[in-house]
Length: 607
Image 1 (cartoon, helix red, strand yellow):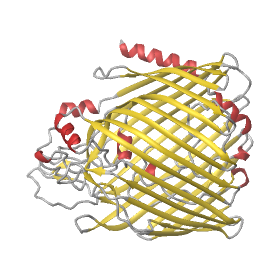
Image 2 (tube, helix red, strand yellow):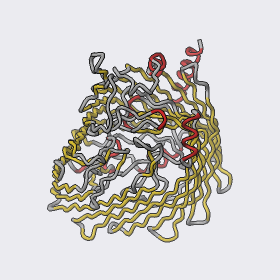
Image 3 (cartoon, helix red, strand yellow):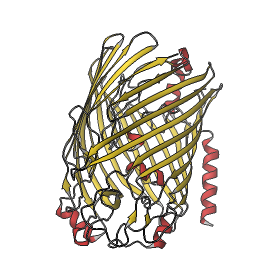
Image 4 (cartoon, helix red, strand yellow):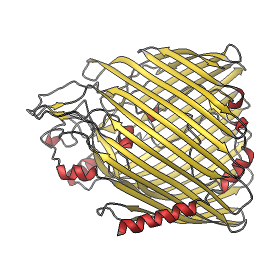
């Protein structure tokens, strides 16, 4: 009966959300209501590292669905490139070139480089009309090279990432409709196959290579600025995710079936303007997961797997979130308050609630103050777990994390034209935050027999204090420089006594997540036809487990990339990317190094 009531609540929310929108959609849509003003990114960001696909590709998906409120019209010129994200190791560096999408039919870009690196992009704009558009885009990133692991052995290493996307948009008088179909196909190998100890009798059969496929269908509808008090936005999408192979036991022959997951989700937002000063709104989300567990066996005899628990981990799940809120304007302040609560489908999980609030105000003519209180449940799909770590044991589905508290504040200060400085501070608490390990995290119980192949996971309550500074300087179209400095102080706890004791002995440090980060990016265009970039990133104070240590400090990452793009003619260009110029064989995941220095050269054609 509880499930039926929940479904009725969701149905009512979706019906109400047909009137939904955000206040900021109006201001943006009124100015950007034609397809002529849309720009298309030609030179995608690229970095040949062994990471998840989402950290490598920059895709031209339909407009990102966002329900973030922007109550103040404090205009600051945005950089052509943006540093965003919580923890995204080694964001790719690249050259970005834009052109009016309505003036061109499409483009093709091809590149080849060291480590047998290949790059390909192509797009065809089948429709470019005032009221509708239809684009088809294909992307490929591949590296087939060798690397030397920490045991001094040279191993074959490759990844092959592909994406095919078709996107359609229709502009009606009062509404904008969008739909997209996307297929991602990725292939990689478990190249860390060395052993430093004897395997037990129940040795595992781990596939030397792996592949995944993600088919996504999306639809969104949103209202335009038509001077009505109601506005809305609704976005729905479905995923069919498949993992190619499972991990099997050599002593019990069976098919190497991988996992499969079906997902359907709806995000919706409703806004009603009582008057110029008071607004009511409702944000709602729903996700439904249907799983098929892969064929997989325990990593070793020291790890106790309860088959019934594994079955529970992969049973079907539903998750609903509702966030009613109110917003008011008082003098120079814009204040928002609401209550966000999540309803899970499993009896073992309880309804969780978070207070949401925000405050913004202008500080004179050159600065804006923002403060935000947020949080909420963060369900992890099977697909998202592998995106976080592509070497995660395929039998593991991550637990649902809960961000109990997420408090942050910043001041955007613009002392001079083209210059922006933003100091920021924050504190957050996350329960059931995952940390990955490539060696069993308790030395008293042995090591993981899949060490060097697959990662397992434990869970913590993570407390983090964040301090940072972001700066941006833009001089016309000639120069854009931006930098970011972050300091993260972690205090991690575990409900498992043995793990908690080990965390305590190691200072409760973060796992893989850097305690100190620096990012510097410069984009220069000395002449009209030439674009240059320099991108440097430092990640320090990272820790992880290895075969002999629960918490070992990893080496610093110094990632330096430069590149250039030159237009031979209006429609023909060439480019050169020099990635990892310091030739560091750093570890993104412990014992999993990345390729060294790579030069990629190629050309692009617009037609």
